[in-house]
Image 1: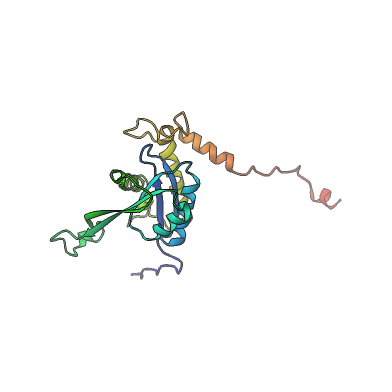
Image 2: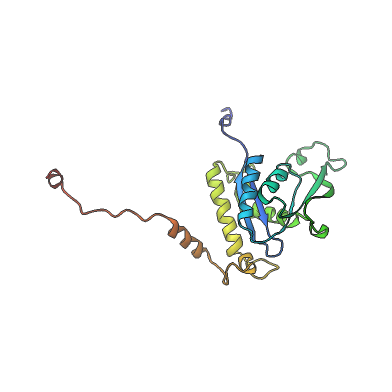
Amino acid sequence: MKDAKAAPEDAGDTWTWTAIDSESKLIVSYMVGGRDSENAMAFMDDLRSRLANRVQLTTDGHKPYLEAVEGAFGGDIDYAMLIKHYGTPDGAGKSHERKYSPAECTGTKKVKISGEPEKKLISTSYVERQNLTMRMHMRRFTRLTNAFSKKVENHAHAVALHFMFYNFVRVHQTLRVTPAMQAGITDRLWTIEDIVGLIDEASPAPKKRGPYKTKKENSN
């Protein structure tokens, strides 16, 4: 038997930050990175750059959001946190089945942070449903399989393709159109060929080779 190899020194986990518009279901901004304050600020700065108007924002209780939202938006936002409390169901204990199962939500608390967020609109349900869609569409998020991402760069590329597909190609079940069409970004249904075309346009043109010369001609 061979011993399992130790994880590389630079190995670790990575997270997908996601912002969704609750009306159009459009993924407004996303980022693949760590779960620290630096990544939170980078994510919120990107989100702010993509918005034309004042919005109401709801995040979970992750503490780095507090500084990141204030730094990106200042007072120009109606911001609230939805804090969820989790616990272990009665009788579940620490069984093998519980090892890879999420904890059970035992309660929620809505906390106003800045502006005047409308209480009935304080919700993270849409983005949580999107997180499920992302995990179901990409096997890279499936633990204990050979499809799980081993390289963060490839993981980020896969996430980018997923969100492009989700926004422009996938018809939303309740909207009957794509999120990009609902948001007025495009007036048509895109195809996979359209996405491939964008990749080809962004790729550098191949260098043109000059006429072939013999060794004797090169020496002259």
